[in-house]
Amino acid sequence: MCGIAGELRFNHQPADLAAIERITHHMAPRGPDAWGFHSQGPIALGHRRLKIMDLSDGSAQPMIDNHLGLSLAFNGAIYNFPELRAELEALGYAFHSGGDTEVLLKGYHAWGKELLPKLNGMFAFAIWERDAKRLFIARDRLGVKPLYLSRTGERLRFASSLPALLKGGDISSLLDPVAVNHYLNFHAVVPAPRTLLAGVEKLPPASWMLIDAEGNTEQQVWWTLPYGPHDDERDLSFEDWRERVLDSTREAVGIRQRAAVDVGVLLSGGVDSSLLVGLLRDVGVEDLSTFSIGFEDAGGERGDEFQYSDLIAKHYGTRHHQLRIQESEIIEQLPAAFRAMSEPMVSHDCIAFYLLSREVAKHCKVVQSGQGADELFAGYHWYPQVDGAADPVAAYRAAFVDRSYEEYAATVQPKWLVDHDAAGEFVRDHFARPGAEAAVDKALRLDSTVMLVDDPVKRVDNMTMAWGLEARTPFLDYRLVELSARVPARFKLPDGGKHVLKEAARLVIPAEVIDRKKGYFPVPGLKHLQGNTLNWVRELLLDPSQDRGLFNPAIIDTLLTNPKDQLTPLRGSKLWQLAALNLWLSEQGL
Image (cartoon, rainbow, N blue to C red; front, side, top):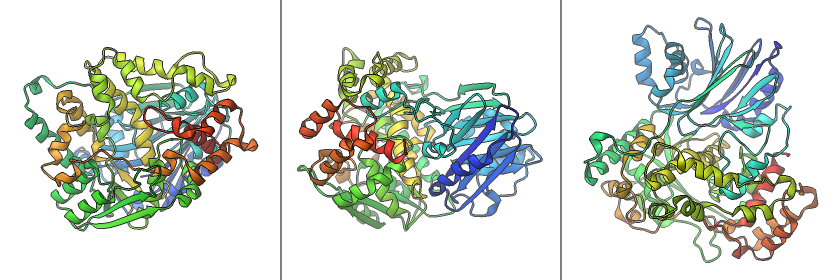
């Protein structure tokens, strides 16, 4: 888990190593243990290292193999690297380090792009082919590891974070109006390849790109997620699926313990994180550290779920750490959390993960986290609505989309208005794609391959890596993801959703955390926007020095007058969405 950066020139000039140094060092929190650079003609690579798999300097990066003519900068973790190493050794490759980095480099030499389907892990990497003068970049199936790109006629640059990429210079700060439409309508999700900045893209998940020194480019999607059972699975019973889900989850949890350092768990007290703790005990992990966070109550809503996280911690005898945050600290730390965001995110989980990661990083360098289970196993309330709807797209939009096109048009100033419902068209087009027949499967596919990537997964990466903490997400093990897509919806939707996963969990963990009302990382102070927090938001939006001509002042006045009644269908604050965008732009100096 690290930060990577690079530049490839197309104009026969040497790469700008100084720019890559600025970009790379801006990512020091992602890789506080070591750093390195490699520059040769048109290519320059930078790397910040967090030592996890191999603590020796043998896995230092950028990794250069002069014999093979390859150079690598890699961010992530390849969990099945011992098995791949054995395959490569059988082919005659010799190794000089003990981690996953060298396996990735030599695996590319052996198999080229066919290496990608062999990888079980989270990754974004760049490999320079010295003799062919080509750069190969790739991203993992679910986009757990980010990769941002800036391209001009003279060069391509890339980095693990957008704010770092900006430090290289030569990038316009102009916003992309279509991305603004997505941000305001699609719950702050801006699907790849777009970002809020017109001059920056992100490589889509499960994609690779091959670029030569002349700028010629080839790009492909190397993995998709089809829905529906295989022919030999159509007659499986509920019990069969439950056992397969449990076994696959256990394998995913177990393989993510591979590290040269201790691995803890972010324990919210919900089913997903509690199941991780139970399965870690199943696979023989002792002396496990767990971490929970809570906030002040607000608006009549409880700000913690300690009763459930404490129950699991006590049941399994973990070394439990409980963190409670006051409202004043939320306001104090919000700017720093937004500086750590590659793109603005409105979920209140962001500040929770940021502050929790600060605490966790004092105790360990790797944690497992439960993101993804809701999107894979139908844990959200809109899936039953979509399943029974005459118009599934309309049902999905009614539950998930924050604003109608008309309200969006009234919110932004004319300069930023797009003349069509870009976010709505994106949803309709995604539902229309082949590969998922049932309406609920279409919604699950959209959420698993788009929303999950650019909200929960990005949130966890950005907030944990801000403190040099590696987060591993076993529910996003590709084998479990593919299995979940084959489980019939009738086994997911009952019992408020995630039925098959809950029943699998019932075989492992106490029923009290299963038979409870669904919870989230609650941050009531941000959700309800009252008291000092509301005053802070008001100052942020009304400060003349921060006025970018983006929002209609009349809409801001309306939202500030009565924020409690201006909520999205997901019960998020429309006022907070505007404030979050403004805060992110300010913290990035845009």
